[in-house]
Image (cartoon, rainbow over all chains, first blue to last red; front, top):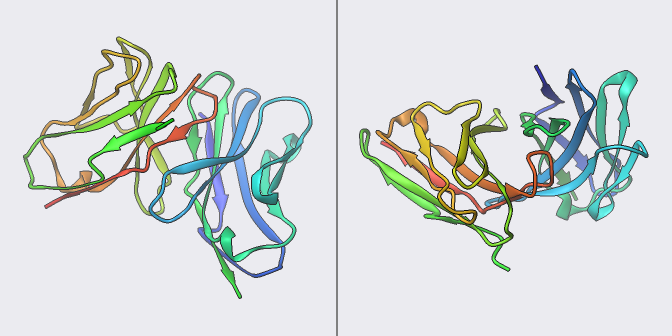
Length: 112
Length: 112
């Protein structure tokens, strides 16, 4: 069965610091991988996705993620945090052609 | 474009009452789905549809019914509301089950 684990339900960084949100997955077939962001009282929106090809994926708002098959990981990073990055972030996995399975979410706080 | 529209945004029910959460999309997406979001549990799939007339169960279908008579609409029915169904409900659509999901703004349901 496919599953997604996000390490840390809450991450706090200072403005300008590196953001690292961790995601590990299990999948019996090569997966599609996604990161979504949810701002307060809103629905989720796509940050980035990996399907095939280049393992380093760039998304919106300066975020990127690297697919590491050997580590079954898809960690999300951003070099320099902004106050506007404060939100909840969800990692999701889809076995090829299948439905998305979401992780538990990581709430990111950014301190001035 | 409106995208994915959910109504109502807020609803309070008494135990045993029934209601329907409405979802409509104007992107001609074949795939539509309903999720519930609970603290610390991420998003869990309730029901989904891959096209008009076709629906299937997700991870947590008990207590909910769906139908898909048109491409645009995918209502979620609570047959006899229970306090355990207190949650935020999101409708989403996509061109395929593993494609980018477009989310509505959510419907916050409280069952007393």
